[in-house]
Each structure stands twice: as structure tokens, then as C-alpha cells.
Image (cartoon, rainbow, N blue to C red; front, side, top):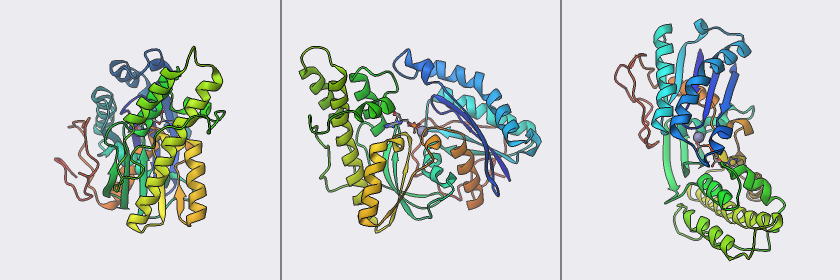
Length: 348
Ligand code: KG4
Ligand code: ZN
């Protein structure tokens, strides 16, 4: 079965073709980062318009790279939410109308489920059950993943998401949007011993996080410096921030493994690309004898491949596909409302 996947929840347009037997055949992506950088953040209206411009050429690119035609597609998966409503509507309307024209069903997918399952795109995928650390720009959650559709939140952020804390701290250091990856690069040349920032909720009894205080601590540190921040000073502050956030993410992940008795950790979402986070989790995994899996770097941030995969796995797990044509997006959508046997209006 050939599944077309379409992602348009925020500032990346992603299209992919996933074959239930052969795996991922092709994926194409356009990032709007350069366009939004000028404004210091995502401008929703510009995002929607750009998705409109990009999605058809991206589909053509994916079909040609996979050597397939529209007639080969069996179902169209797309991100139904959560995300920016206008951006979601573009992908949703595109996917539903294409499927309607082709006479094929659709598979509305939860964006976070796409991230959660994205490590399964790897050549060496993790087996269920596992603990997932989901660290993206909009979410930070620890989840117990027992099977496709069987998710239990173990802990989550009470305020800012980890990626958001990276981006806001990067902005305070004068880095362009979205600064997470740039901050992490800057931190590599920083001195970890020069500053120490708080580790919020490190010792709390639960598995929750809180990162807004950390961002405020970065702001205070920046303000305390006299004169303009030179490169080394910025790198040292970036390093202090990263040391702090990585330690919290690692310790809470270990605690979640301990609490569940599971021995597999899966890290998903954009912050999962962070090198220091990976190095520290790998070191802990060797020491404490658990396995840690990451999506391929290109699938850490938003992409169509994880949406096509999630749609395909859902279908295989028994979630009925939907008759194409009618649709709605869900800009706010808790992941837990996702039982596999859910029957939507118009299920086929
Ligand atoms: O998963 P994602 O593409 O978007 C959401 O669904 O939210 O993640 C984007 C987030 C941004 O906040 C970005 O700054 C962060 O992931 N990010 C990183 C790195 N690469 C991307 N944060 C820390 N270190 C990185 N290397
Ligand atoms: Zn995402």
C-alpha cells in the first residue's frame, strides 16, 4: 500500500511517499525559516501562503523521486493538528481534495504522533513498548508508548516547551529565529564552568518540566553583563543554558525509565537533534544498560515522512481510513484522544 503524507502544521511543507512493504520511497521538504527569520518568528499568514505555493511542486518532486504516479497512491495522510489553523488548512484541503479526485481515502494524523513514531523510519527501529521524550518547539512530554495509539503521558512541561526555551534564549543572545540549533552550535565553544544556571524541577517528585524560569535566568545573566556581549561571553552563556536544560531532560528521562521499568527510550522532536543531549543520553544508556533511539536527523524536525508513516501504521493497527471530501483541522488537539478503533464520521 502506498501512502502519501502531507505536513503543513507550522513553517515546513513536507511531502512523502511511504510504502507499507518497502518503507519510505521519497520525501521532499521546504523550510520557511529564512522567510520568517526577518520577522523574528513565524508569521501565520505568510506560512499559509507559502504552503500553498510549495505543496504541488513538492508532491511532483516526491512522485518523480519515487518513480510513482498519482494513480499509484492508495491513501493520503495529512497533519490534522495541532498547529497553526491556516497552515493546517492548506495541507488538509490539499490532501482531502487530491484524495477525493483520486477516489482514495484519507488519514488525518496527529502531528505529535508523527514525531513519536518517526524513529520507526530508521533502519534499526525501536520495538514497543518504550518511553518517549518528545521535545519540540511546541511540546515537551515524557510518554509511555505501548503500541500505535496507546500513549500515556508521564510528565510534561508546565510552561515553555524545551524548543521554545532554546529559541527564546537564543533570541536573548542575539541569534536569529529559530535559534535553537544556532545556540547549540554556539554552546560548543562555551566554557561549561563559567556560569551556572538553575535546573528547574530537577528534584521534583513528578516527571514534569518547567523552562520559563530558565529563560528568565538567561535574561538576568545577559543583563548583568557590562558592555556588549562578545562572542566568548555569548558562547559561555549558551553553554550554561544548554548544560542546564540537557541535565533536566536527561535526568527526567532516566526517572521515567525507572518509573515504568522499561528499557528503551525514544527521543523525538526538533530538540532531539541536539548533540549534547544525544551524547549525555548515550553515555547514560551505556552506563545504565538501556537502549536509546533517535529519528534520523532529517526526521527530527517537521517532515512529511513521519506523517505518511503514522498514517500507514494507524491503518495497519485498525484505525479506519476516512472518505475524502469533508474535513476540519484541530489546531489544539491532545494526543491522548487517539484510540486506534476511533470511528470518525465518514469512516470507510
Ligand atoms: O519538532 P519541531 O520541528 O517543531 C515543532 O513541532 O515544534 O522542532 C523545532 C524546535 C525549534 O524550537 C528548534 O529551535 C529546535 O527544535 N531545535 C533544536 C535543535 N535543532 C532544532 N534545539 C536544540 N538543539 C538543536 N540542535
Ligand atoms: Zn513538529
